[in-house]
Length: 255
Image: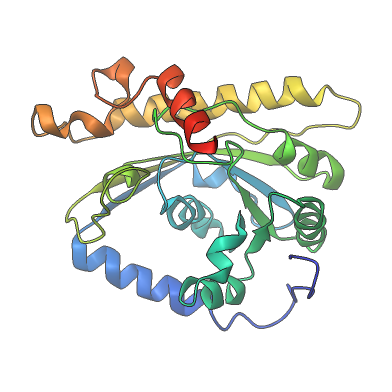
């Protein structure tokens, strides 16, 4: 649990910088083409809630890339199972990410608030799980509530292209070469106490979808053929499930 041992946000960063350096080697080795647009929207100091869409198991790497031009490290909230893995666990803890126990989320929420009050950037995936339809699913209000509680700007982010390397229901292709990845960062929202949290969540989702729509329009690569249309959403002629079909698949999986 996140509150079993307090994370020292003011301590030395022994793990995050080497991981970033390793990621750069990986990106260069594979010729990944990463485009970050709107990075100036991430404040260079103070608490920030970064709210990203979720199309891939790699999204936390690239969504956090949007904060790098502001020289910020992002502490992502991620499911606890990632922290239990013998390889990813020590790395996630070393980078001071925040484990989320979905059966007891209050401790994780408190840890996220503590990080924000310490002036950190906290990354959140408000959809909670990967979107099989590659559109923005209904989102939860946690990111909004964190921003309100700490007076932090709420910055929407859209990531696109990562699903081609590793997403739900597809074989991972971590060595796929020259994959373009777009990271679009939107203007901050400044939620205030007394505002309707659900209405704010709806507005956040609208902004995330707008950024995602733009990233999908701007993406420089088209499917290689009929069998390669799986990574496009249905409304753009892809063979990904529609949002309704994806919701049913998620429900069946939960059952």
